[in-house]
Image 1 (cartoon, rainbow, N blue to C red):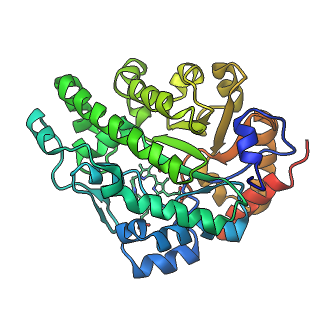
Image 2 (cartoon, rainbow, N blue to C red):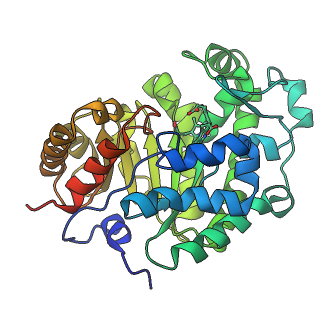
Length: 341
Ligand code: CP3
């Protein structure tokens, strides 16, 4: 039904002519057409207005022709729906004025009615599917419960998320209770996203790499597994854990269809840790898109040769940076489309 199904076939482990390509944060500030919309509407207005969110989602597709689109939204719409206020401050990032720091703070955290509080996301998905006209698949996403907890407890971005870790290690019961609430809400939310039309789900565990391997199992992966189990029969699930190479072995056994890899883990090591059978996604250093286009193309070819063209999705190792020249992002996509073994 979807005309270009390279991405779906790679997720199923099928042999493909070339690997599919998309870029994390492909709808973003490196695109002049994104900046034009950004000037007129604040962040959550863009997320909450289906016409805007769907337009921003298809902007990079029109320009570059990636093999998958990712819905423009944010992982922090989940705490927002759970009655934890989230602001997006210009030149600062996320700000949560009333963070969760102790057991009694949980009293005001709700498990929301998904349609009531996040119905706008489903509307944006339906509108995006119409605009995509079955050309390519649409990815829906959520943050991992641990990554969401990081923001809920810290109240803002951080280099160490020391308060988030502090809650986990000093009052694990409260941390687990918050993680479970986030997990339950996320499962309900992702199921609705699939019903609304998302073809694939990606979980972003952006701050999983902050935890030791043992703590990762307890405070992050356990909850990711619940989400995979609840979703995997409805849609393929991709798990991206930044800095989480140490957990790739367990992740490969989890029922996920693909695993994201960042640029600090080599293709060879990622294949070794995952047993060579699961589809991998990644892992170009986003800053490497600052190299000249010719160098980018050469490096992309080498990267595909190292991962192998099958069971592989070309992507960056994290989100694209705002200072990437548009022609360099173009060279990245083109190199994949021109790929020959
Ligand atoms: O990939 C896409 O193009 C889809 C859109 C998308 C956004 N956020 C839009 C956005 C996705 C998949 C996200 C996920 C997200 N949001 C993550 C996980 C991925 C990652 O990068 O690790 C995280 C940690 C967040 C939380 C968040 N949202 C932060 C820390 C920030 C501020 C930093 C920044 O990049 O500016 C945001 C804001 C945000 N989310 C922007 C975009 C395009 C930029 C702000 C703006 O456009 O005004």
